[in-house]
Length: 120
Image (cartoon, rainbow, N blue to C red; front, side):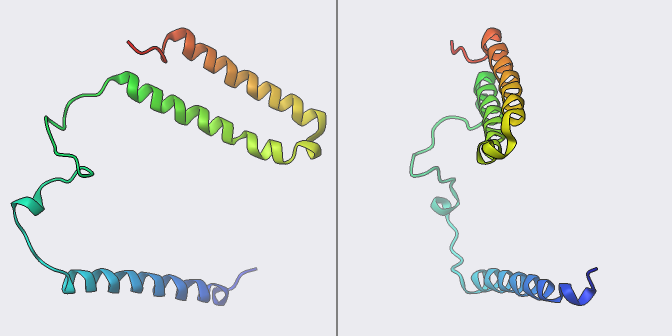
């Protein structure tokens, strides 16, 4: 069982880290320059001059492709522990992974059939 004394080093570390952050932010705000102007208050976009309205709507296809990328990327991440323990899992683990890949492939085929990846 843990006692409150076991957590004392952790509490001290959190207090020191939070204190450092507060001191650093306070010093930067107190010692830093305070210059304002039209040029400084403008938005900065990686050195590219701004043009047009920033509120221009994006195509839903863009967001759909981004979400699908994240979805399939996370599914691939689930394969790493299986690959690391491949020998220990044996044939049962292999069959489980085939079922998992079947579901992933079925989802991918569904996405392709729906035309979610077609750009117009």
